[in-house]
Amino acid sequence: MTSQPRDPKSDYYLVKIFFITKRRGIYEDVPGKALKEMHRQVGDLITGKNRVAVRGLLVRHLVLPGWIAGTKEVMEFLADSVSRHTYVKIMAQYRLCFKAVGHPLLGRRITDEEYSQALQIAVEAGLTRIET
Image (cartoon, rainbow, N blue to C red; front, side):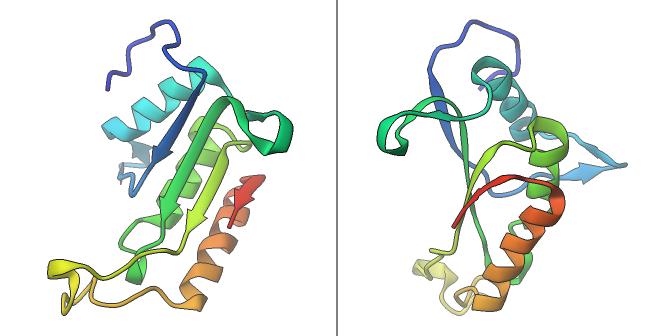
């Protein structure tokens, strides 16, 4: 994916973002640049009948055990660098598969408390369109 300006190729983007890194106070990675470019092209989500996406950016974030998905960084990035009105679906569906079973960080499901905290983090970051 490029972060170069171009004509919109789609009416909406559905993106799954796991993490964004922050160095020296600046979000520097490719996913961040790509998200900003997608938002530039299609803007905040607009829905039509039955809440079906018509145009805009939809972001999904999977909460992982022990905060290894960088939930705080992702929510702050979206609110501060993309739009406070970014539509965000915060997902709790993490399942243990294959080598994750027994892994010291990924070897468990997330707790209800971790999920609740993820929702609170999104609110505290200033996001206004959070779906559970």
